[in-house]
Image (tube, rainbow, N blue to C red; front, side, top):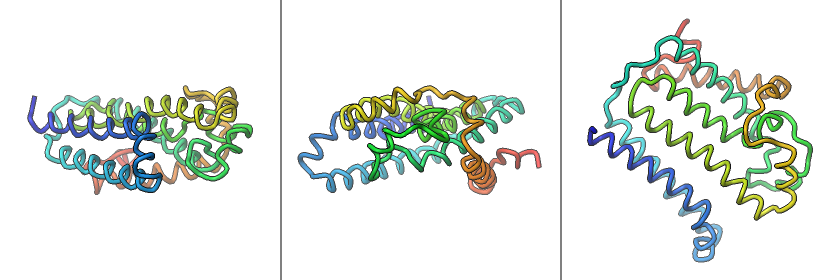
Length: 224
């Protein structure tokens, strides 16, 4: 295997592994030693450093190398990305998984919007984004990095459930009983107009930016 691809794999392992380690087994001892503020600073520093390594290794790795899935792959990727943007758009309001005031109260409320689909809409948005790049089957560097992001999102969501059960107790257990880890896709149709409008806007913007920034036309812009 190409040495640059090996480095890319190592960079992604470092990025994903450090997130898992600092978010779960190392969090308590690090907070005890550094304090909450110190822990957050170290967490951000490690995340930025490992993400920079991923970015540098990605740029150094060869583009292409896989046959690609052609037009069918682009159609599937476009649909997946649109769904991801709708989930992402609705994930910022009323999300008890986010470290914000009122999280426990939100966990006790009746799920609405994209939370009727899954209690982890943000994580599933990243997972769908990752899958949209994997199905294109265009390059090893894209496939490796997308797989790492998808793994971080979906395993991280499951681990987040365990952590929130410890931190929030019956409030999170109630939230789990009313929601689903796995997406219930028909519920997306009744998620409300706001996530769809914002999601469509994000989809149009980011797929357009994919051309000038990524060098490849994506989404509907590929056919316009």
